[in-house]
Length: 315
Ligand code: MN
Image (tube, rainbow, N blue to C red; front, top):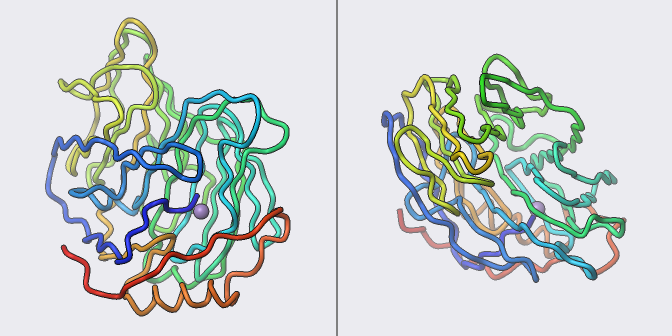
């Protein structure tokens, strides 16, 4: 997806530090991406990075009969990976490498931009009439961010099971199982389902920082009720997480975590960089049709970059 926020200046996302356990709920900000209403969870005003996770948008659930609720024309990315994870519906990805793949519930579309790629994301012609999911970005470490772009589609992902709990490992590793998606830093992304009324304990990597976002249903993390449309940052130093679903239905939540990233990144529009000069160059290359290639399979014009003003961002 494309960043719907139109700030003219870049946002500095300070490198993470191991702070110990925390409980910081941050409500979503409502935005629109074309005609699609989205909830922005990351970057948040107080919480810019969770491990290498640097961006989280949630959309849906919604039903439609005509039109395309998602239609994001070709746009560029640098310095990051994008992961599309759906609970319902379909999103068709097309990129400048010539890859074309439909994301569906339970499958992972993972794009590594490296030094530059362009892609589009849209509701395909053949669809279920429903859409619900999240779009995630992972910052690439400095050692890998200039690598060649690539795209992966993973129809099957490992599952971790515990009494009352089923976890799909989207990226990185959890409970000894590792996603086939290529990760560039120690990380975890998982879709957790807790049975109605169940209390379950999930083992965590103690050195990681973590955050949770409720996807469906209601329940608690530890003693605290999960607030809807809110990302709760949990800090580092937790060896396990107790999850409880209310008796009325299952709880489904997104777990994000990773080793504190250790690098301060600069985010603007669809770019994750380190300096304003890099962002200016990437923007100019996109506007001049250099570096990123063409999404030939997309029917329509590409996105224009918004204006960029290179000035130091407030910390
Ligand atoms: Mn995108």
